Length: 370
Image (cartoon, rainbow, N blue to C red; front, side, top):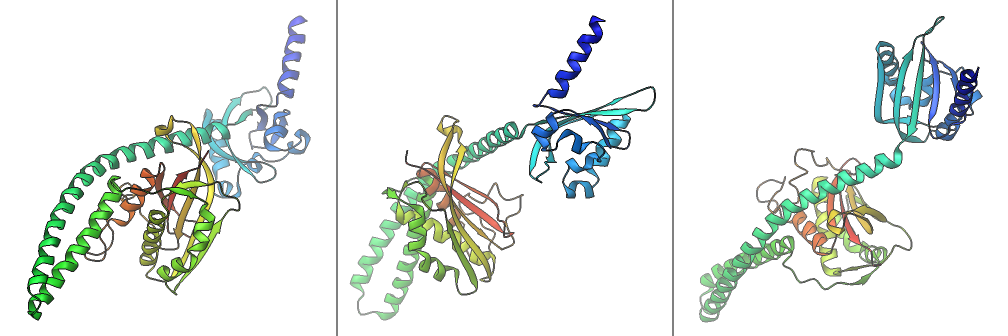
């Protein structure tokens, strides 16, 4: 008798449990019973869920792909367990679930018990940690390349200074020889181009002296809208989205503008001068192991376009100096490396992904002044 009372008390406790949704299904997947947890996790009153097919707990796209039937067939053949499966609440919001189903044989008919727990917070934390680890590994690799680039750029800069000074002296001596002057002018322009490339290499290697000042990103973006529009060209529809009251950052405004112009130029070229570009600034919180591995506030500036995008096979290489997808002679391959170097030297990071417009999206994370 005492055992029966204990079992009854345990059953009542399970029915009241709210941190886990426990659902009993028949062999066809229809709900025959559930505990109070289905209301806490899915938003359904227990009595409202009884009689419905458990496919209502999955998204329409997953049901169309037969995910619910795959789960049911697997559990009828044995048991099913999965972490991080996407499920849907009554209000159509999605969450990540820890899902376990087990077949329970009975005298009359077989039933299935499904246990669900919302692990969205844990899932997002793990994702942030993985993303931070990937950013750190990429940063370490690029840092090694940056140190090499920094040394080479200083050597090139010294050589170019000698060549430029020598050419200036020759120009001064051959004032009357027009043919020689033309040749010297070509050489001087080549030196200027080499000097510009060297500056970009220095930016990637962190060898540029930044002059940071307290700034509000939204104001910077709107103040330069006309300049951005001219860079994009008439065939590109430019949109700037900046949240009101963005936290302030300290940034070298000139280098910030140079980074944005590089990204806009890349977007324009990727779309062959026709398409859409969105420049968006918003507050973000992210974890960088270089910053003690804790969440820190950033302002994220993203330039996204409607171009063809960047393939996953080359995303790891796009920030490396001299890497380019353009034809030979159409680009130096230093534009994105300047962006990455500027972000890193400013205490942040640059990442690349896919834009909602379908093309590439490059994001610059700059730390907030706290």
